[in-house]
Length: 433
Ligand SMILES: *Cc1c(COP(=O)(O)O)cnc(C)c1O
Image (tube, rainbow, N blue to C red; front, side):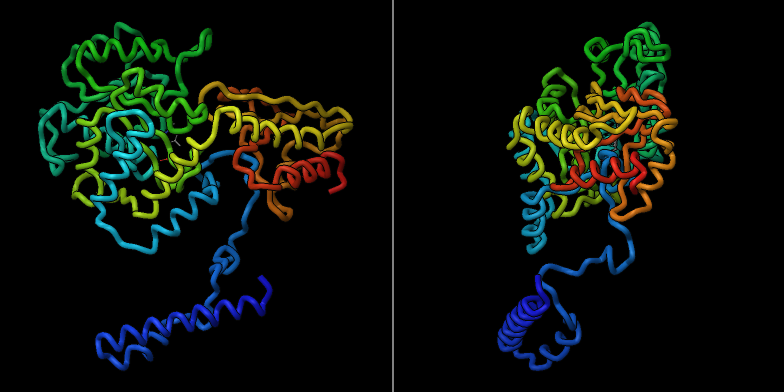
């Protein structure tokens, strides 16, 4: 927007504002309202908002990494953003919104119950609280402090232990770790389990030492023999889109997805899907109740944003979503053509982050730059580019990198950024940076 149209828009909105204020003061008979309101109005209101990143001096980045929490994960697509903006203009009754949003999502994702949570980690806490309550028949106010002598074990395979275990501990739960099927059966028989947790992306990988021994179906079957509810953490596991109903369809009692990763909803939103009796209990433990979830508030903007993100995801086909990501990979790969020693390759990790990633392999002896120098150059120049953190690392989570391999995650790129990333990497690899 040019400066003159901007000040024009500012003038118009200011005029509208004063018209509204004078109508209001006439209605309530308060003459001084105009002057006090005037004091609060910004001297240069701008219709498209202040750029607070610029104002605060926080550099924006091109995210060629992926849905990493520390990089603020996804940006919402325009449709989702528009829905959030509209929702922000009107207060509603929070319970009405939570209930209706849950019913809508459950219908669209073909499960009994759903709840918008403060992210997948928040969903794990609410799921644990729900299962503790279900097993013990106690009040939300008893967690975490009044669980002695009550059931509070969550059964988890050793290979599925992770940083999100604390999302369960904070409800007062404790993890019972199992390795073999026999361990698992005996943990179920012990009678103090309230839930099991299955880290979806850590399913057994044949022949890999230390990997989990028990697969999804067997895990579920055994727990259900003992009537123990099963949570599945699939936070980063959409796409494929069908995962949004596959695991609840298999019989997992509760399933969580992060809202701010592949679903491209607000970063502080997530989904807990599953059996209605349990999602209802999760709801009870959620904000604004005074249970475990009180500090996991999901505001109206995030609830609506999550619902809109579900609609956005379902407006795609698997092919359209993955095909778009593959085009970006191809465009960046094409920019590497003819650089001595450089070879490119597409990989799609099997479970988490199941989208095309570009591997750029090179020989530092030939290019004259090392992986660290490339990462640093891309990061410090403008616009700052963040490559996938598997860059220069050993094979990990389905990404077969090595010391001389750059990894480009393309799915969080904004329109047009694929071309910039291609040009910049080419420039650095050919030392024309
Ligand atoms: C990202 C992630 C989470 C946490 O998701 P948030 O939405 O950031 O709370 C939990 N579990 C797994 C496996 C994840 O990848």
